[in-house]
Structures are given as C-alpha cells and as structure tokens.
Length: 192
Length: 365
Image 1 (cartoon, helix red, strand yellow):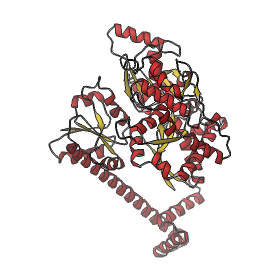
Image 2 (cartoon, rainbow over the protein chains, first blue to last red):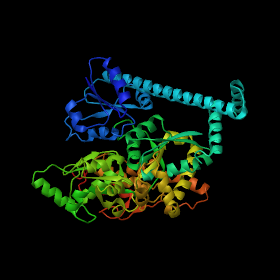
Image 3 (cartoon, chains in turn red, yellow):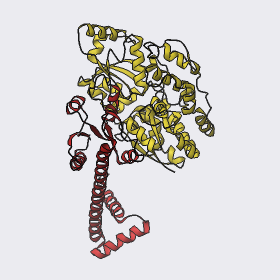
C-alpha cells in the first residue's frame, strides 16, 4: 500500500511516516505541497492530508476530474465507523482513499496518522510551555537582581517582595516580574 | 458563551473579523475564538463535527452540505447572514489578456480557444477556489455565454485563493475566478488583468454567507441572535466609506487576510457588506446558485430548489436581529434582474433557468 502524506510541517510528516512504517508493508512518501504530476507518478492508495495544508481543496477536487486524472483520489474516509472521522477532524488530519481499498486497511492508516498528529500537538504544547516557563524564570531572576540593586535587598527579601506582589494582584510571578522590568525600562527611557 | 468561528483569508470575512477585533462579539457577551482555516474542505468538516460553531462559507457550499452533495451525509445548515455582495472577479494572465483583447465577455477567449484547438494545443487551465463556489458558477456562466464548454474546452482546476498569483506567475494556470483581494493582488504583482467582475454580469453577486448547523441554531437561538447582532454592527461599520482605510489596515494583518493594505483598500471598492439590506440572506440568491448547480449537473435534477432555499437561507433570523438593533428591516429581493440570459429570475423559475441556460446538462439529459 502506498501512502502519500501531504503536510506543510516536515517534522510532523516525518513522525507520521515513521509511525506508518510500523503498521504493515507500506511505501510512505511525504510532500510539503501536493503536486498532481508527482502524485500521479507515485499513484498512492491513500493520501493523508494535514488540515492546515492549503492543498486540501485541490486534492478533494480531483474526484471531479476523472477525465484528467488516471487514478482519481476519492471520498472522505470512513462511513463504517461513526466517530472516527470526527476524531480525525479534531486531530487535524484528513484522508482520501483510492477506490477499492478496504475500510479496515484505511482505518489503520488513519488511526496511526491521528495518533502521531496528537503526539506532535502534545510535543508542541510541551515545548511552548517549557519556553514560557524558562522565560518566566529568567524574568524573575532579572527582577530579583533589579530589586536587590535598587532597593538594597538580599535575594530572599527580593523574592518575597515579588511573591507578595504576585499574591496581592492575583497574577503569576513571571508576569509580575516582567511588568516590573518593563516599568523599570520605561523609567530608564528604554523603548520609549 | 464560548464560540469558535472559522474563516478563510478573504475580504469577505470582514464582518466576522471586524466583529471580533472591534469587540462587537464581546459586547454581546460572546467569547469568540476566530480560527483561520486554509481550506473550504476543512471548514466543512469542522462545522459538521462541531469543531467550529459557525463559519464564513461559500454560499453554494452551504447548499451542497445541506444536500450531502459534497460526497458525504447531508448536514442541514442555516445561513442567516450574507457576508458580502460583489467581490469575485475573473482574472486572466497578462499574456493571455493581451491575446484575448479587451471586452467584458469571453468572446475573445472563445476565439483563442478555438484557434488553439485547431492547432492541437493543450487546453487552457483555469482555476477556481472550490467546486461549490459562486466562482465556479460565475466562470462557467461567463464561458458558456461565449460558447465555451467549461468541462470540454478548458481544464478547470481548484487552488487556494492566496496562491492564485503564484500559480499565474508560474504559468500553472492561465486565469482564475476568486474573491478579492486576490484578483487585485495578481494585478499589483504584474501577473494578471481583471477581465470582468462578477458584478458586471451577476449584479450584486452573492458570494459568502455565515453558516451554522441547523442543529446548532435550534439549540442556541439566543447565541445565534447575539452573533447576528454583532455581525450586523460589524457589517455596517465595514461598509461606511470613512472606515474603509481602517478596515483595509485591519484585514491586512498577518492574522487575517495577510496581504498588502493598499491592495486590499482598492480591492474593497466594489464590495458591499451592509447597504440596502445586503447582509440579509436572499432566498432568491440561494435558488439562483442552486439552479447553477443543477444546470451543470452538480446536484440531481429533482432537487426541490425552493424548499432548499427556504430551509437554508433564513432572512427571518436576520430580520429579528435587525429589529433588535432598531435597524430598518429591508425585505430581500424576490427577483434577480440582469443575472440570466433567459430574463428575470424568480425562485419559481429556477428549474426552467437551469434547463434553458447555455450548455445546460439538463438539456442534454
């Protein structure tokens, strides 16, 4: 079975391709953009498309163009199992199959693609959170240093002052620290 | 109430974008998250499964989804708001425009196509944004009036709106029909010429609607009215000439249409969002578009067009929101004049127009 993964995100596509390779004998190809000529040469049995690929409408319309395309790509997958298509939509993945492929075989491909999309989303979220945490820690360190220098506090006192500001205003420590730094910047004439 | 609304990067998403950016949704107590989508297929899928509560949608797509004509189970939709009139245009590559010559009809193009066929050249490729779009039916009607069969004499393809210029420059397509700002963007890039605007042969061209599922509308009547009030205020703001420069700047933002603000401002000139009841969904528009779908064999010949138009297009819901804002309720038009080569169009005549239109697939059986 040949599977074409169309996904503008190369990391995610690689993850999907790697996941699919474990399913059963598959030939998986990845393209950032859909190219009709390349696709017809490869002759995929299934096309897996990221829902953030602008090529989706083009791929979908190929079924309208049977006279042109020797192997038309057809139909949104899966009427056999309600809920699967919905889960796929929510995971941000859609699939098109070529006539004649059994629903069960398509399902395994779609399920792998979905799980990899979800995994990628989770990784991205974790990364974003880690970046935000790091930025927040840096702000707190810098705000502490500022307070120590300007107010003559020791490190522990500076931290407790920030904590108090955070609790009084009900805002996260990192946000309070960032505000303090921005305010100090304005007073010094930065970015004004 | 928290809502997710989808849109595609086009000028006609203006009311949705303005209602969010200017706080009209928030003023109605709605906590809206806008989700920029990159394909109509994804908008369709997300609406169907409830991953979006409402969306900017091609009017013929709303009809097709309701009928199940997009290749899946029917999902009845409700379109209580017309997001724009006018905006689609047909743009030809500069090279082709030079050969075809001036004129708002496709006669010059028809002569070129005949000549190319005689020479054994490959058919010209023309792009639209989605099969079920006003653009597909505008381009088909324009070609058919000049005797060009869109399924035989040219190659019709589908491409995303924002890629049209690049496809024209690359010679992948020779022309396209898309809504602004993507026609003006191609002109500004020196890649193409606007051959004709939709408004020149379908005056006050129907194009996009705001759509929700019938089930959602039934379950959330108050939220729907709140949405419509916010959209009405947004459309009125967007239509005011004094606000157009600010509208262009807003739309140009990378989070929205992501195009040059000067190009967007120019390309808005022809577009109507509010004036003369423009945002009230006119069932006669739905019937006209459904007649085009039937003409080309895209929906079965036995579809009850009047019933479909009445079920999907809901001017009553729009009127309720207008009245709540103290706006004058303008009754939608009953007759479309200047659209059809077969004379005035009324809902009751839909099937006859589908049958008698040039190159109708109904006529050939």
